[in-house]
Length: 621
Image (cartoon, one colour):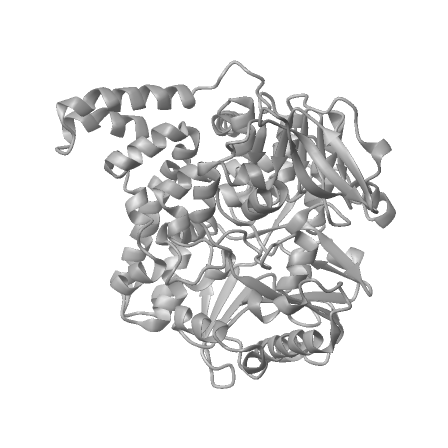
């Protein structure tokens, strides 16, 4: 479809002159070359799925995989790649490269692998710190095939209940509005019309916008495959907007679009409800991103069976098969750059000692800011114009406060379902977030929290009762500015003092109070309670400003220029980026960021390879 659009462009579009025809033809040729498989090694040449093995319940056996501590003698010889960071962006690119026979060392600063996919166990409860639900994981979908191939079919997924989300709007003490979000476009539409019977036209227009974005969303990715000089030229002469509507759509915020569809403030809020999945309020986030997210969950949400730590647990053996390792408690201080300006390894600080590890190429999954401002030597960062421009095009995302509560009782005893709740005190979502963020910490401690995500991860996992009988886990999340907590960023974890504890406890208890208004039956069942803040995120996942979704997902970040610049290749030879900052946030964004990175390294269109394998498997089944 895309190539046919390009082929007709020269003759059909009045903007193009005769002189532009050769340019269009050259662009078509380049795109066809990029989207044809190259003669290199195809990591997805064959189906490697095998029957799922029984869930490993022994914690010590699991720790042998996901908690392998860094020591020099564990470093494999003759490395091909070093990956900094073991989130899904790092593990996915490492696993893909391993499938081509490459020996990859993944280094993680935390005490276990997984990044935001890790879990922790405390007082007989397991808590998932980042994976609440993932879309497009039903069998036969492209993303499911990708994950199946990277884990050899060992990572299994459980669908959430339907409806999988509920939107709650209004004062929790005064009969707030509850709107269910169903999977399947037909059910989704019917539920909205039932709740808003006078808004059929606006609902249908919203669904039409979702279809438009779905048809054009791949066009943004194409810029990441094209040479950067060509992207810059196409952007400068305006031809990018000529061959695709995508970047014109990125110029409109979520609020810009939904306010043209309806005057009903509650329906506007329902259209925009899950902006918390990428962290940028609807007045600042591009509608194309939000529409992509709604489409992502149109067939419901899924949860990894056995918990989020299963993700790293099943990716690491694939890396090890090729001779690689994933080592934790490895604090990478610097990317090593030779006199010719080429990356050739990393410097690790371990217990006061410095260890230099060499490899022909280095990949950073540590995020754009960490990669360029912390790991890259300053003399290179300041002399590279594209690196400087990349940093100018983005800003830090907002931080988050998370509550982890352990409850006494099973999901049946507590009458809890495998779904999420998004609760808002006000239908003006942007205004509510702005007003809350503008408060001082003291004022925030006395305030109702206007955005709350509430979930019970244990209800989503069919193995939970086997692993933690008679217990339930609860997760509550809200957005909060880093500035409230930055006075304690240099303090040791668990030793930040009474003032810090007062702020985080007050916010956590307010979130708990609001959660209990939605589920009164849990109020007296609490056995464990912990609160994480933006500085917690800074410590455990290396988020510079406590952001959980990397760089901010605002309109500027998704412009054509930023889209072209945020790519795996950097101005430093043999140094690459992977993860959510080069595509978009979340499990899926970081996963496909890994695919983009591996494509750049292998000089092969891996998306086409995965698509071919997926189509082949569909025919076989």
